[in-house]
Length: 77
Image (cartoon, rainbow, N blue to C red; front, side, top):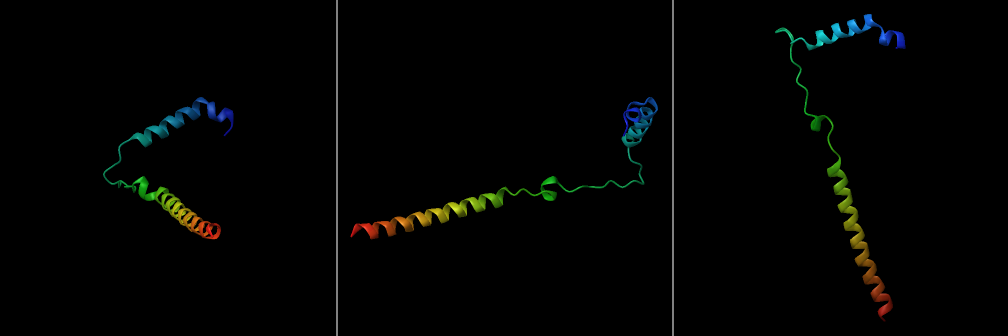
């Protein structure tokens, strides 16, 4: 949109008329559209990240224990 159209007085009145139309309460014939909650439409991935994080920590711990047992057996004799 050009600057002249954006700041023109006639376009402002048209914008106000459009805004007034939008602010009017809906008629009885208009149906209210009920939207789903945001958390259902855009689910969070925090649970997935937590699951991966704890699984990786568990695997690293098991690897550390296995390495320490191997290291202890190899160099203890």
